[in-house]
Length: 363
Image (tube, rainbow, N blue to C red; front, top):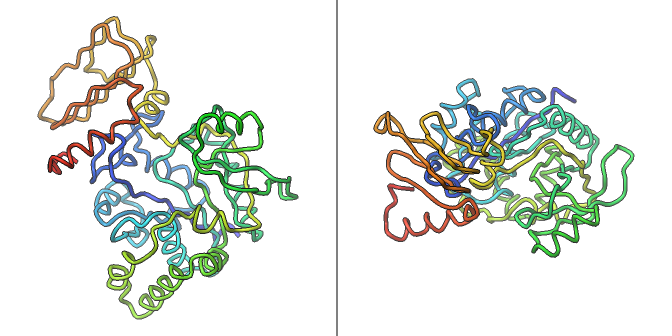
């Protein structure tokens, strides 16, 4: 079945959580925010999955405004493997369209769905988990990967584990939306829950059936796209139809309603790289816990992160820190962000304020 394996990498994004380094035309998947400070997250995701699925069968689902940047980052990827969504409509329409494109190419396809902007530090364990999940999916069971939780986390959804399966996976009992701290602590202590990391694996034909069953309006739209593709005018139909698709996540629209559903418990140093705090946690640090570029001088400082995304206009500028602790300092050619690391979740407030002021050029 390996010759029928495909991968879809979801690579949209609005560029808010890592402002000012990330922007609407450069969301976080284009930034090297993981342990490898030279490798953009999308490039790392493609590199890891390309050891299992060849580049010719890897599709990138992104927005029309990000096609040029995606092609520049992945020049060896076939141009037809970049799927440009006219507008964001959440993950169910994204996966449904990508699945339809793949099914036209190969009716026997088995599909892996991943996010472009995540990190897997233990790449051998990552590959083993992906291989296991694909094998289970090839046998006809829609499958996901759940991450063994290392702490109570309120920023992730959870998957409740059921019985052991003969294929080495576990049954999924249910998905749980992002909990409060009390419930997150209870779930982690029970050892019956995994973090939902958003990996999905399925036969393309099986996903089409699930969409028709649970999201019939979306299935009708995808069917119309298929007919337009046969006539050679899918782009026009896509521009007309995609904005009408229901904006719903694949978790809520399909996975929560699907049975049986299998999950592979895994631990491979996964992170969704959600904030500057996470970027600090993942990055190599000096003995004082600072993450700083070569042009930075840090004296009597601890646990700071300095990110310099400026270009030619600021060559020679020195970033200097003195006697500070736990700061995030990010500079670009046109913006400077300074905040405590424990306020990283609030960066969106700055983006919202700039939008309210009409300063769209800074977004």
